[in-house]
Length: 262
Image 1 (cartoon, rainbow, N blue to C red):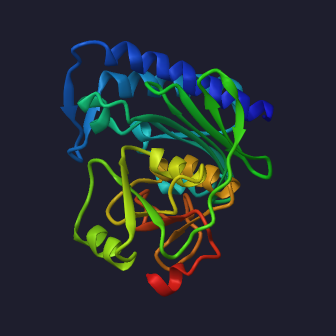
Image 2 (image 1 turned 90 degrees about the horizontal axis):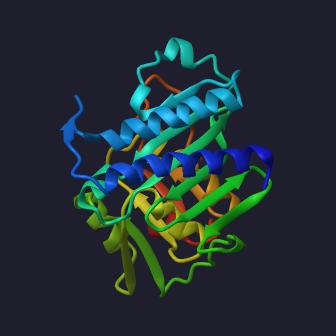
């Protein structure tokens, strides 16, 4: 593991400790202006991550979900920056089902070159760095190199959302055929299912933000997969004023017949 990846995983674990302190209490939930939920855990994690990253790389700016009001006129001049979701899956956090994560990514020239996803309740850390591979760390075992799977037409596994779904998602599942297994899980853990060879594809139809996908994209790509928009173009970051992602697809096997199916 590179020094920078090591440092990012340690920061994610430190933020997770703050999250778990709140998780074990009777915490308050309030809504942000976009009606998404916010807890003290989101803010505690945000504060520790931003502080630690500023100390680690003082010349690299940080864009976090909880401090996302940086104008594009400033952001468009960044050649690299940290992109952070301090608590991805706040709804799962509120439900106390354990399916939430800390996401930290380093973006360079509009693409993620480092990604860390840490699931505090599961004590699982997924991380990757450009040209260094993707790995899974946890349960006291040695770090496991991740390899996405080779997809088979009559045996597809689809990763899906625990808390989000719509008619377009259902239409996508119908296109996958009759012999499809669906695995529902919260937060960016869906990317991890693809990266570690458990799922063939994750399709997201509906609004997400760039901090929801960046770390997962790096991990999937370094495991051999691909993350694209629905036109099969690689997902980009900080290339427009809005931080909302287009609908996107996460493939384990880029060589599979996805274009014909979709």
